[in-house]
Length: 159
Image 1: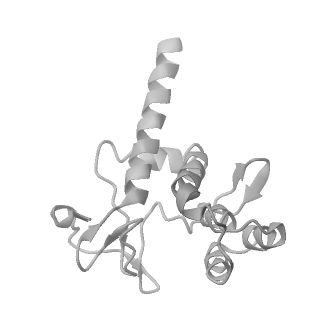
Image 2: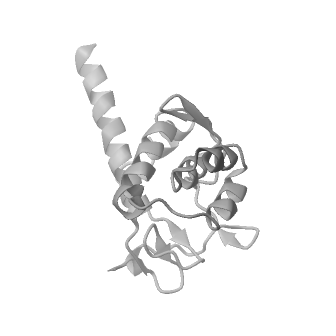
């Protein structure tokens, strides 16, 4: 785990008692992957945890918070640990290729993006009490940002 204490903000923005990040996967946004529509990154990510088509449909059509609750009670597909990071990355690419999310992400410039949280997730984010975590979500967002910058540069070269 990495110590992110040097990036600790003066205060954390909260919503209903939870740390709130502007890039939250819980924010409703229509994304399409493999000709399927999802209400949010969270819906896609949670639905991909199962091979059961009916459960996927239920999770896909729930609210983002409901999708997470339902997915906590299902049998997880056998290869989940091998594919979960790619699945998240795939959803982030889709979400941040559309406005207003694209501009929000590009407006971060070169700053470090940290998924601060107060629910102890040190894989996807950084715990706001210990300031430690792997921050996989933040790192993936920075990669998506670099891809968007690259694409913008390539467009300007073509023009």
